[in-house]
Structure formats: C-alpha cells, structure tokens
Image (cartoon, rainbow, N blue to C red; front, side, top):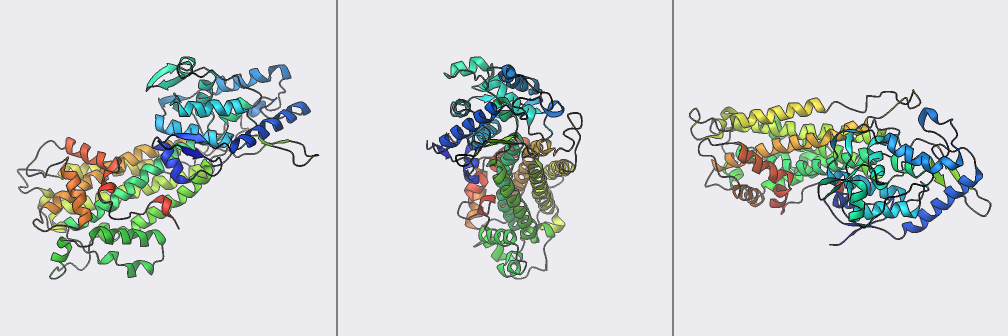
Length: 518
C-alpha cells in the first residue's frame, strides 16, 4: 500500500479523505528540522525563567499560580490526568485516527515546542493501528477539545485504554504489544497534546466526506426518480443555469443531464405530455442541490484550513537572527468557532439533501403526481407497497430538521468565567454523523422507489448510467411484485449509498464533489 506522505500544514483534502478511509501514513522528513527548532526554542524560554502559561503556571483561572521548576514534569502529567474527564460512547476508530493524524500534523510544524520523541510516538501509534479509547462527550470547543484530547494523551503516557484489534486494552499493555514504551512528558508537552481543535475538526471532516457521498448518491437517485415520474430534463438545460451564475448549480444541472442522456423513457414522453411543469422536488434539483454543494464546499475550505492549522496555546516562536530570542505567544487559536460554523453549514446541507429526496419519494408513491400505481405496487389495497417506507423517510427527515439547529449560536462560560465564550464545535460536529446516516437512509429509500417506478415503464429503458445503477441494485434487491419484509431491502439499499456503490455504478458520469471547487 502506498503511504500518504504528510507534509504538515500542506495536507490536501484528498489526503485527509484517504486517512479517514484507512490509508497508511508517514510524516515527511522535512518536518524534522521544524520539530527540533521548536524544541530548542522551548528550551531557551525555560532557561529564561519567565512565567509562561501552562509551562510553569497553572491553567485557566489558575494561570497566575507559579509552578516550581522541580514540578514541571509532574505538572504536565497532572494536566493530562485531570483533564481526561470525558463521558459517553467511544469515538469511532476511523475518526479517532483522523484526529490523531491532525494532531501529528499540527505538532510537527514546530510551533508547540514538543520533543521529537513525542511526535515519533504519536506517528508510531497511528502507523501501528493504536487508537485510544476516547469518550466523545465533554468538549465545548474552547480552550480546545481538552477532555477528548486528554484521553488521547493519557494513552500515550500509558494510562487509560487503547483499542487493540477493536478491544479496549490497558494502554501500557497495548503499547507494549506493538513494541512501544509510554511517553514521559516534558515541559508543556501535556498542554500541547490537549490544546487544539482536532477532535471537533476530525468529526466535522469525517461527516463532510460522508455528506459528499450522500450528496452524489442523491444526484443519481434524483435523476432515477425523475425518470420514474416521467419528469422532464428541460429544467436541467445549461442555458437556464448559466443565467443564475452559481457554479454549484451549473455543475449539478450538468450532472443530472448526463445521468439522463439517452433515456428511452424520457424520449417516450417528449410529445403529448400535458404536464407543463414538474413539482419543485424534480424541477428545482439543480437550484437546491447546487446550493447544497456550494455550502459543502465552503465548509470544506474552512475545515481544510483548520486541519492544517496549529491550534495550540501558547505558541512557541523561535528567535530570528543571532540576537533573536524565542518567545511564547499566548493567543486563542484553540477557539473552534470556524469549525462550529462549518459544522452548522454541513448540518443544513445534509438536512436539505434528505428533505428534497423525501419529497421525490412522496411524488412517486402518489399516483396523481407520478402516474404510477399507488404506492408503487401493482395491486394497491391488497399490498401497501412503499407506503410506510415513505413514512420512514419522512421520520428521518424530521429528525434531521431537529438536529440542524445551529450549535454555534450557543455558549456557556467555563473555568470560573476565565473561558467565558466557547464555540460548541464539538457538539456541532458530533451530531453530523447521525444526520448523514439518516440522509443516506432516505436516499436509500429513493433508490428503491426510483428503480421500482422505472420497472413499470418496461420495456423502455433509462439512460446507460441509470440502468447500471438499477442493475447494481437488482443484484441485492428484487422488484417488489407483492408485499414482503421491507427491512432487508432497506438495509441493502442504504448500504449501497453509504459504501459509495451508487456513485460507483454511475461512474460514467462525473459527479461534482467538495474537492472540485473552482
């Protein structure tokens, strides 16, 4: 397997996606000098003996308490253990691995002052598949994701637990099993591991990648539903969308045209169809989904910057020139407001993907709108067909609406009002994965409904890409001539969406994504 070479500060969105999907990594050797320079600068600051937050002082409201030089190592261990106060379910391994890799890329830029040994251990843990068990609740998104990152840090010092082959194992035992020794933290190193937005950013970025897949799948199922309803492709005409000028709308319309190109179903009703205009859920797909694409791309830009950022505090700056002195700069890069805003944008986008998809399902099951048999069954009444599948989709859409309320507008003071405004980015980012799962399920229902609807048009065929998608679905799910258990069909269709098989089956058409912004 080709390893992803991480060049700290310059990791591409595609590389982060590959890390999330399980790609092997290695840190670029070009980072070695920056790490060493940062460690040397920290040594200079220590020798100067001036008070530096978290280096020789307490934290938060205790920043005015000076810590003796003899206690600096103990201070860092205490910081980690006291801050490892998370609760809730364990962070999923792929997201934990993404978080660790972001932390590695941040520390390797040399502005945190950590030792090469710390960076080396973190890199080794990632390469050897050691993901700490990290409770997912307990961060307010400033001062950094303290509690979750503390659980990562405690594993590095041999405390807490590590997932070894998916099994929670005492950290010291798991490290030893992979030939690694626990870290003894040097001055500032505990704080450097804890401070940062990597937990929130990893959750948000992982959800972005899942949202991208659901978005692309929904373009395919939207075209399939349009075919099933004998909808027009005129609303996807390029001339309409260039007048609107939105890049996402233009690209979305282009994809929909390509998905339907050459369809015999479409050709069959070009003449004699009395409908002047289709319902909005069919006709306005480029406008809605194009806006969704634009929002996801804005979020991608923000999260791409954040994933490459140094979000520690204080930051260690090496002196310049022969007279230059190293400095520790106290600031607020740990405040995750950009991540919170990006997460809220993703939430809105995911909510709309599902909402539009569910409305197309509703069109298909209504004979007055689709011209198809009621609830997509040949013998309605005796059979209920897709009646309750549409209800399930509606339920999931409403769940997503409730979860889409912005997290970034909330704040609560912490640390005796020293940390008096926080971002809530962690909560905003964590709620995205369930939302993408809900949206994927709705799109899965549409996949089933669209294919079922097109079956009624036989012997007419759809376009080559859409027929390839129907063929892929029919490998797992048969046409519904009469009622049978619905859940297995739903599970199969949802899996095709979540695994990217719908997009892959339509592979002849280039579908726009978050990484293709101009």
